[in-house]
Amino acid sequence: MITLQIDDKKVEVAPGTNLLEACLDKGIYIPNLCHLDGMEHPPASCRLCFVEIEGTDHPVIACKISVDREMAVQTGTPRIRRLQKTALRLLLSVHDVDCKNCPANRKCALQDIARFLSTALKSGHLDVFLKKVRIDRNHPRLDYYPNRCVLCGKCVYICQKQHQRRELTFAKRGFETVIGFFDIQDGTPAVCRTCHACAEVCPVAALIPKTEYPAP
Image (cartoon, rainbow, N blue to C red; front, side, top):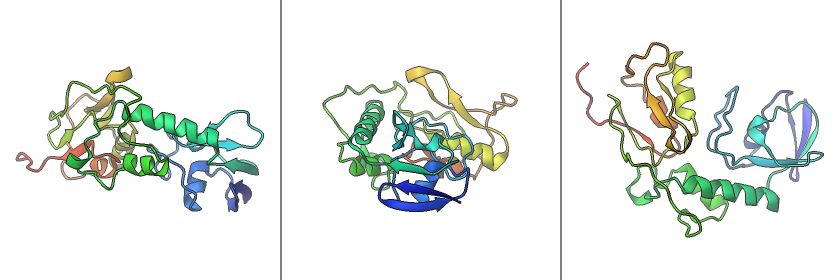
């Protein structure tokens, strides 16, 4: 076992443990959107889980650190909080903040993180840039809301894990990046029926199962 000093708490973890998982498992909260337990290659797309490690010059992303030695870790320094607040504001600048009309209201990861960081969901400091397509109804079983999506990749990961093949993937580039619906192995349309794992794991209700399915 390896001993970690995380803030004012000493914990022991197995070698190779993901640092973000180690913190969360020990009740030490670090803001994050794209992490799932057991994920071998976290995408680090949300850029929220910054920590400082003694002996390291710059803050690092906890989800990308594998524990291989004793470490002293700080999770809430002023520098860390500034980075996390900046990352959250950037996410919100491309997010349709319409909480009262969103199914994720009061159980939304963005709301939880904003509350933890004492940051308003709506800010006058940054312009908001939304995609033109408000709802993508092309999937036979799901409706996709691009302007809610935080591109965390959880849906892509869980679909691959559940079905051993991807029926969801990232599409387009830059600001136009969205979740695409197709089997990237052979280009055929998605055939999921009642799985809904992708919708269930979505932290912001960007994927919503259709209420009425067409006949199989």
